[in-house]
Image (cartoon, rainbow, N blue to C red; front, side, top):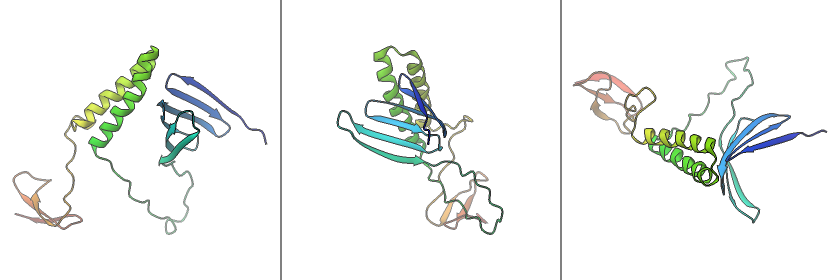
Length: 168
């Protein structure tokens, strides 16, 4: 079987091409985040010079199989949603991992990429969504009366899993 793989590094960004497709990774020093040709997103942490590393899949690929019988189709598990604070801090950390080595090496594209991650992280920390509107509030965890999300000045009953039609 013939194998093929070629990669090219542009500062902290590495592009890879193989028989399976294209992949990209970003990172510097012991940290790297990559998206492979299979669509999976992985993070890798390593101890330089030792050969010791840890890789974990943090995002899945899109399933390309067609389901012909809807009765057989299994519902997708709920996606874990991260808070804007978590996403903002991760974005800022990624900006620092890209930016610091890029500044030291004088790599302009890396500095620009880091600036975008930094600005996005700051925007996420301050709770603004892409539309400029404040982030939507989290749903209550316990049953009870809460301010009505549909009409200001009223309370609506939360059953523990959904909003009821009861208002006061």
